[in-house]
Image (cartoon, rainbow, N blue to C red; front, side, top):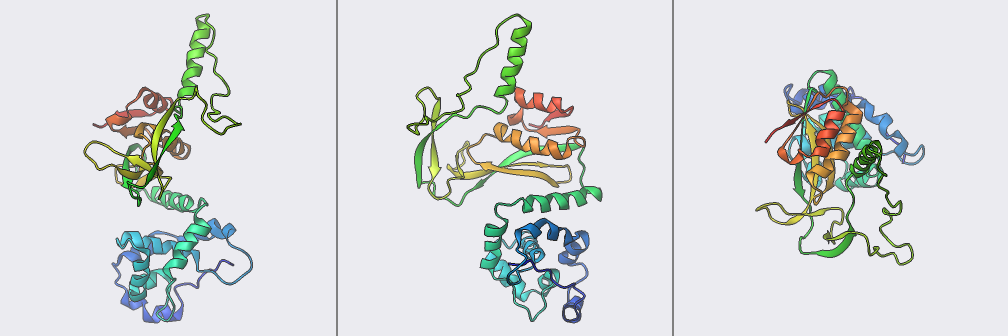
Length: 312
């Protein structure tokens, strides 16, 4: 399917029939004036063929997400119905009154089949965030981090009990290196590690080795990627955890989704690594709640020459 780029909004049909009907203070006009959407085309071009029938304009598909979220519609099917009768939405998408709105199944299947395994969503997020930083909307001096759980669409009673190996912490290798360096300074032999430790499963039987430390977890039959979450008085359920960093103005700088049974102090490290790769030199302070105040996290932040602020 070949990628299609729609005509400009200066198209006579759109200009004469819709332009004058959309209020000047409408949110879609603000979105259109603040963001240059053309950067999406080169980001998705490699996902389309040079041959075949014309596709739906990728900018239209991504703008539909903004309509879905900004206006709190939620349902993809309902979003398509709202666009069909709402002139402001049609103007924003560049769809004239005599054109057909993309079908919700076509919209969803594009995200599943074409964009699902790509980095397009992250690239678009980063580009819009970059524009916001350039305009001075985002204050990168102090970054606030926390995680929130989102209930998965999975029945908590439909699961299997599985035995899995306990994965070592991300900082264990670094900790062992430091211990061995200190032992060598004091004339002691370094602690040796078995290089085959990471091979938790026996190659012949395919089962966990007897000497491997394990634990039992519940795996959802409906959504295996989610994790069983239970905290305090909250209802036990399958969920996801979103490790998120934002600035003092509420702009989300980074969000990483992990299984709901991963502790915040563990999911912090991959999220912080991505954050540092992108904005290390701009961030001066990291503000976290007490659940994150572990020696490993504090050490990592201090090594990046940042201050760790504890917010209880």
